[in-house]
Length: 163
Image 1 (cartoon, helix red, strand yellow):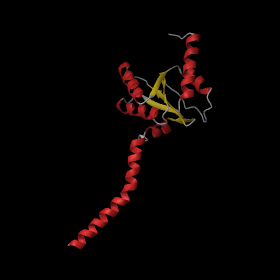
Image 2 (cartoon, helix red, strand yellow):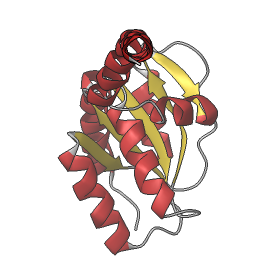
Image 3 (cartoon, one colour):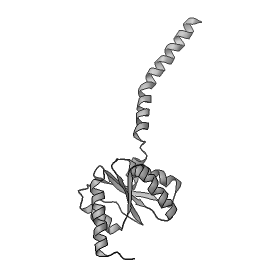
Image 4 (spheres, one colour):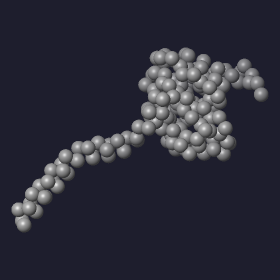
């Protein structure tokens, strides 16, 4: 069903507001995704604080053209949706996590990260960055590792002296 000009203007306005307010955007191709899976994806994204919007590619391109985004827009093929939010990594990470369980139905085809267009490979790499609490835990482990090694060595020296 064709959209009226008024409806297209309304959608374009919503897309411009979404793109303007978003810190990070993932372009999602959702080919063959069932309605049930789409509903599940939307609820998972909502829990992460990520919004999800399906729109015509021409309207998405118009909304993005109005923003000052560096680089070249990646090729947008298939049915397209935007996953966007106020977290740098959450949109890409959430879609990537859902993509693991629904292969060949949904994929990240690019995105906008820190004001620059990114291709599919770059966005998938960004999506694999662990959440902040896990990164903090890994950092603490890196700092703790030499101390732990020293304690083990001192403990072994103490055991040798006792025997």
